[in-house]
Length: 346
Image 1: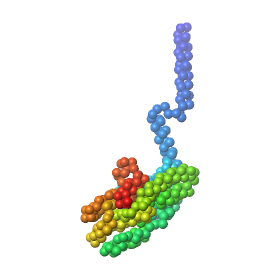
Image 2: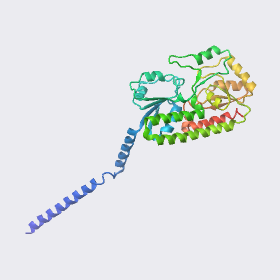
Image 3: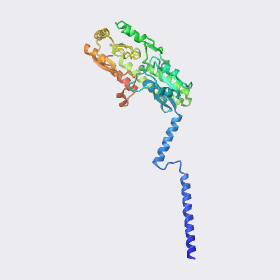
Image 4: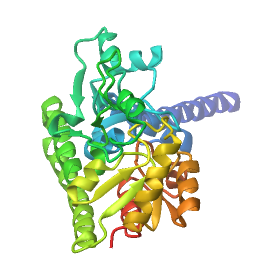
């Protein structure tokens, strides 16, 4: 009798344990939507990021100012990549097979102009996809044809060869491509990018409108700061090593005199250097500007011969390492340019 009772007791305990396990399992099934460990939470977060990336537009841009303007408008609704980075010259860049594949797979490709990215027509001819939306940022701008003060020097032949020669991509170096350095024209470019994004992604209309308006307000503020700073200035001439600031000079009724031309690779001959020295003395110029990231040798040579100083201007063809390290960007660099130009314009 005692043995039968023991067996019966064990059966009851066994069934009880089984019931507990079943109930516990059911309880776990009802909480699977809420991760219970850090590892599970991380995996769930990663999955959310991947889902978000899958819904984003894929946009390829060429170089820094195109990337910056696009990113400001597109925000989190697009994965915006920059094809040219570091110290690479956008003029002479050669797209790789990887670049072409990246553009082929993108929803949108944005560049500035053939005058800047001379290689873009060839890249577009290499694409297999006809679904990529191509946006030319300079379409909103009446591009500036330069009439340089160096036109009468003894280097006319070489100068004209560099500026007027049309290469195999029908690139005329006489057109100034630096359209992003005028904060008013920059607003038109931002609006152009916004309209292209809305056409491709109508659901994001309000988002793009808001972000474009916010960035354009910052650009307008920069414009007003330049206008106020140069209003009533008697000395309105500035000397640069590289002829990159024509749009900015036009906007604020300034005169840019360049030692060289649009190309940073052409070195002026001794006759041109002598002419610049005379002009520096004639205009009583206090500063010779050179572009951040470029050699300052010519500017320093002229400064030594004329008793002037040298200073930096950002042409923003690329975002310099020092700006990146300080977390600064386009707006900050434009303000730095303003402070630097104050040394000449007063």
